Length: 231
Image 1 (tube, rainbow, N blue to C red):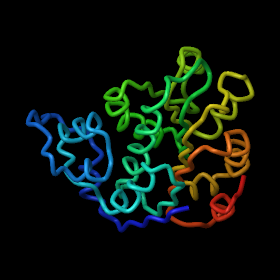
Image 2: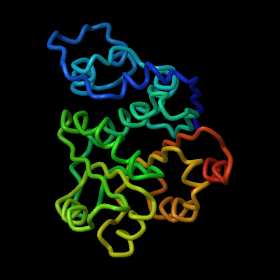
Image 3: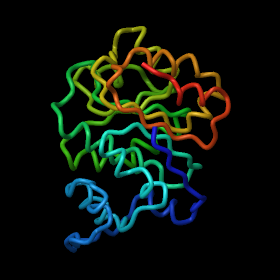
């Protein structure tokens, strides 16, 4: 598992991951750094429109290997730019395949809280649209009905909190046998909140061939075991 690290670049990262009201309408330059890292042009065009011009350290460290299909361990705090570090390779991977079937997402991003799930979903939604892929949020505190209805229609990228995901798996509303990419964001926080068993259950369900992108500030609370887990 390739290791990427990042310092705190909170001010710039906040700008990097927020919505920009005034979209840029000039063409993407050929020397764009995201293009050089292997990010597809449709995604880069959306980033460019939103004034996201250059990768942050954690993205530079992880994107080439992640886009190349390798498993990644990225160490980064909230606000370090890690949403794009895992979101860009995930969308690149699933965009190259077939659209998801009903109840069977092609990629899964697990995060510890509903608030973070909403932020991740909002950040990746325009990028998913650019490559013709759907994205859906499933989290506690929200109605089951629209989440189940979306899954019935086929969801390419599922952003989920562990508890709600487990509930939907028990209801057979979601099946993980087609997952090509698994992302664990803030894995240490999920473990600290008592979700390690849920994480292990998910990892036991997805295919052994699925790419795993794990982002964590530390390797405490059992995260090291997840990193070292073998199929």
